[in-house]
Image 1: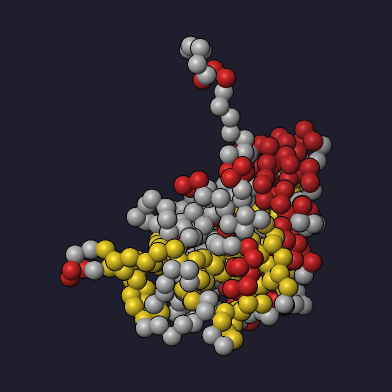
Image 2 (image 1 turned 180 degrees about the vertical axis):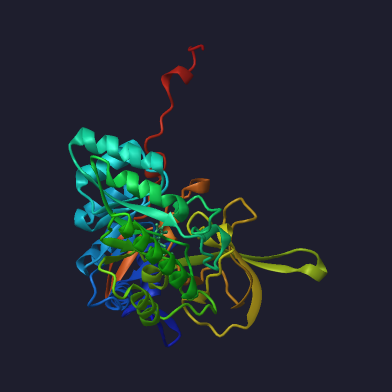
Length: 427
Ligand SMILES: *Cc1c(COP(=O)(O)O)cnc(C)c1O
């Protein structure tokens, strides 16, 4: 359920016409619906009402501080994976006591910053990370709150690039090896063992892999208790899928009910790390048709719609072959045709959609790339020296630019031509 609707053939975001925003801010731009973001947060979080839990939004899915702030005000925390995300989360006003830190490669500097900030939990992913964290904690005279991210070896039944909980993936600690690490950590000065976490993948469309991993975690928590190690937090990660095309992901109440059922009788605080499911269908990428053209020999004619958004703005189609629905901002009634929607970047892999049936478009038409709120702007880059697109947040009949379009000066910010490269110098 989202608040992108049509009125007399025109695309609206809540009470605001998308074409009007395009006229004011230019294209391409990301557009988010505040009402949809909040609705998704409530729909997710309310499934766990009545049990101790914390919903930590996975910042990497959509990192704008205005959006982080929105979720913080709704009662959420943050799941971060870098020092940059820690900085954003704190800037957005998220209570450090609601921040958890995941990721396989935390640097010395990142660990120190997070420890000094007083975050809730470090999801530690290796023995070496534990040792590094202890050293820093002892230097700072602090105690590091630790969960281990275990790898339950469960097939999430999703795209290979976004499955993380299989034994062959780089993530987590094999559940079989976790016991000795827990016992060692429990005895370590400067380390407080607090919990256990897992995250098996993204865009999951079935509940069974979640259930399977909870069962493995639960059995492991029991084994830990027998060895005298108790945990107070169980973190199930994120991964709930959304509908991009015709997927039928779990309904949120069903997902929550299944999780709750598996946890009955366990005296722990549940942590969840949803990303995509909160923001994916709350955002679109709006782009303008620059040119249309037809290439190829007679029997293999292909029509291209060249737009001003590209793989640097939205990487998912190029990266994962991901599907995004494309809607005209204004319906014209033109006959449908099969086209490739491509960007200006000099890569054949630069496409938004391939062999897609769309109502015919002409130069200047606006298109909305739907379901672009997750891993859209946050994965964008400056490839081909394209300034990154602005982000706009709609609230009813008002909107605010929550990140302005990058300028050309910002594109080269920090770059310099060193003196030694000027004429007259030799090396
Ligand atoms: C990416 C990630 C998430 C969020 O995943 P979604 O599929 O967007 O819900 C949660 N936890 C960790 C550790 C992640 O890496």
